[in-house]
Amino acid sequence: MANAAWLATALFTGSWLWDAAGRLISTDFLNVYAAGKLALSGAPASAYDWPTHKQLEIQILGYDFAGYYGWHYPPFYLFVAAALAALPYAAAHAGWSAISFAPFVAAMRASAGGKTGFLLALSAPALAANVLIGQNGFLTAALIGFTLAFLEKRPVLAGICLGLLTYKPHFGILFPVALAAGGYWRAFIAASVTAVILALASIIAFGIEPWLAFLRWLPVTSNAFLSEGRAEIEKMQSLFALLRTLGTAEWIAWGAQMALSGATAFAVWKIWRSREHAFDLKAAALSVGVLLATPYIYLYDMVAITVPIAFLVSLGMSRGFLRYEIPAIAAAILLVAIFPFVKLPVGFAASLAVAALVLRRLFFPLAAR
Image 1 (cartoon, rainbow, N blue to C red):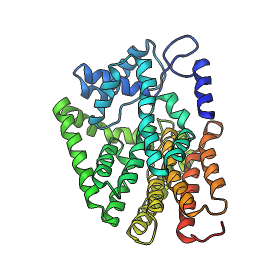
Image 2 (tube, rainbow, N blue to C red; image 1 turned 180 degrees about the horizontal axis):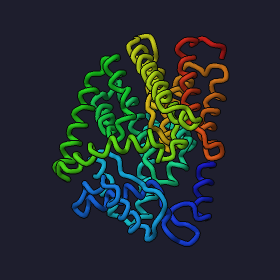
Image 3 (cartoon, helix red, strand yellow; image 1 turned 90 degrees about the vertical axis):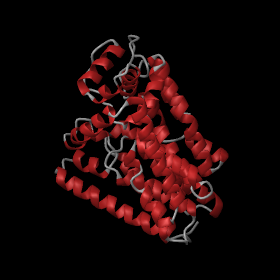
Image 4 (cartoon, rainbow, N blue to C red; image 1 turned 180 degrees about the vertical axis):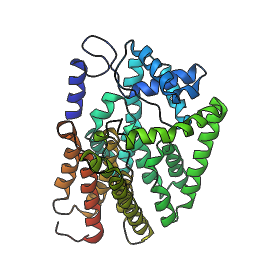
């Protein structure tokens, strides 16, 4: 209800889709729509050219604006962008949120069970934030959730979902570790084949130029976002972002992030290597580990914290909840929700809280209930 009220208020106060003057609002979705328009016009590689892309964004809105919404995705994501760009802007913006929300709900139902999963999806932290700016948090969370929900019984389908997740490869970095540790080679191969097919399909459709442009601009984008902080690093929800926001030297922030990422990868390997732990617990460990391991994660990406929460809830419903486990889950959700008021990487704190719940299940499974 809170998410619905937030969106309704935003629409009627000129904070979503159109402003108070009736103009289209510039949000993250603009970069996708503009890239899609370039792909449809036969110039897909121009989506990676910042000046050209920005000029089209201005043309779409009908007015200039401060900053720039860059296109940083692999070329096969242009298929999605082009499909959306075939619609009027406002319809594409709202429609994308609705379309991507459906698989997210389905993934939560597959992870936590029917009604419970549906309720978790509706109460997902950062839901409204994701919709307001037309981002892809629902899609990312859905692909992570489906990969894990299908892994044991339908490994090939799980691998296909993981292959699709390569549109945001930094959210898949721990999956090879887990799949190798657990011996899920069919899923591993299916993911690899899917990624190759996506790349080949994009080359056939758009040519090799978008890939060359993507690879050329990738280090530039990384430097601009993470080193220079040009993409408002205080909005990122990682350890790296927290330390940089607090004024820590960049090399220290990188060192701390790499140490955390390495420790998380090692923990995932050990957990998935074990035959003693329930699959739901392994899934929760991996899905929250993904959020901790990447330095590049924004508020809208925190929709994905619903995935480890869903597996923890599933485990609690089947084996019983530990003492204070439900309040701790609620606290993690609320931590993400308060970001607009504190402007600090509270999403990172939420991920740590969920990780602590996973570790508690691992080391103190018989804790007082």
